[in-house]
Length: 384
Image: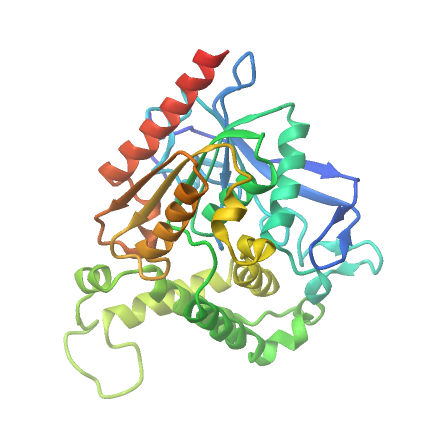
């Protein structure tokens, strides 16, 4: 827990909930008749409501992007490194909105929510979502907050894919878009990683075809394995070598199958910790949403034709050791934007942290994001 909240933190924050009664039609052909979105805001909305920035979260992210819920919190929000006074997303200048996506397990309507038709949790009956469904629900929340146009939409990883979808579906709704450590669609290898993770969960006897709530249990081992696999892909070889090397927990080999190496112990801890906090049905759902993302599919696979609809200015950032979404995948987005004659800046950041680098305050990265957002704000001010 923080002894004292840092001066460059947004401080203590309280999540808010907004309920929607208008049905939300989904790409899968189903709809959600009623739903709730949990969100947090940081900073102040200015008089002409022109300084709002929407943050889109990654696979296991949520609405708590910055600050602390209480003085007992052990950790701040997941993007504390970049959101706060004087940081890249400067809450002295911007009004920041972060929400938990539908289908998640941190308060917004999802598999753990009660299905009004049955009086029981949705569980595996919750509809499979698409990124465009999330963006549509985010759009409704932004409009309900009285914001006619966002200054920017910003996201990393799966959040970057949402930011890209925003620029396509609502091109007049933002001035700037930052796509960080993302890709225009998953490779077969990435889909394969997600499938192994899902099979780890559904093969757990405690999964019970997704109806484990009814049995007062959850697939702890399967979810832990899924997280362990994911965690390996989020880190670079350099990061793992520097953090763990081949260090042994007890300084010697035991010639058994316990966790002997520090990296084994770390992965087991991460998996067990995650499995106690995240819903397995949500994990299945979110990885499928990630697999399905392919906006160019609506345009015969032509990403440039797809991005031609966008009107925003773009910043695309990749990280040198990110092998989950390698720099070459970001460059595909950049090339499509250039072909579509859009204004785009691109930066590949030298970083050892792998895919997780977007969560760290790396100087080149922070400076590029800060400069991009400040320029966007200045251009909106000059045009007013």
